[in-house]
Length: 444
Image (cartoon, rainbow, N blue to C red; front, side, top):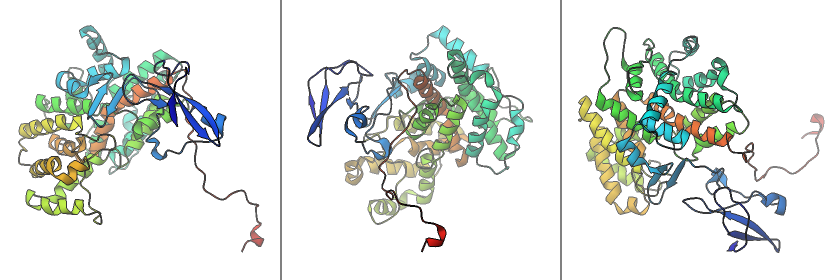
């Protein structure tokens, strides 16, 4: 395949004059090449099957752009994460989660008046329908909080019929606000149910993160005021997990939404996908690894095991499928981790010295540097969430809470795209060819 000149008309992202030539069966086929505002160019294979009779083969879609998006951009080689053009570090250091929500949903950071309006709209939707309280009692007391989240979020469509028409922009916007507002309440209810405590109603006088901590950790018999340091760390954690381009759960939300499913069902599908240990469970696995190592003295033994290709042990929290450089979110999470541990008096958490020593090795040891196995966000988030008071079963729930705005923004962008079609991946079939049916009495 080679690039050549020749106009190919209007591209999805920008007009350009590039095309590519594909030679198959001694015939040449011209394919448009589209250029985004940043990142690699893409070859349009939309007409490939119709023109050639061939499909492409790309397991995991690692070399396929499934959509056009203006939301999030990742440069894994440079360690860059942008939301609508803004670096994640600047959003985390200078803004708050609701600002990031506004940015992802509407394309721009809000001014003061817009922020107050947006915050008010979210705050007025934080309560859930009272009958949803009964829904929780249908789950076993020891049900995993993520199982509860999948069921309860999916059930929202049975309670909020006035925001399920995806052809109505007003209803879509209401559904988006409801998801952002109600997810902390539902997550806190799942937590309370799992530990046998009564549900706590949201407080409109608290900010987003403080209100979530209040719903998780307050009890009727005592007064509770969220620690500002912990609330700020929680808010930062939400920002760092808000969106991450076309990952497995986001692609699931888009694929579900491409059929015309209502937004609550689509987000429930995303939560189910996130529950997979290869996606949302990495921070829990990293924490378990640090606990298994136990102390700094044991690190050399485990590093040796990690380098041994015949040993099944793997260092969790290092490397990333996209980032081939230092995960920009890991730097912020490391700072959060120290602040939280100092605030709660857990600075002697045995996992932290192990984490620090492992990080030093990963950044200096030739084996890790050559393979670009840098610490990622999951490396520190598990320690931070445990210090905040959450059990490991809640880690992925918190991930889902934060990622909801990214999912809903991606869903909203998808349904507003006039070129969007129902998702229908093809396959390379390797099963039996056509064969005749044999009656049971004739089968050997």
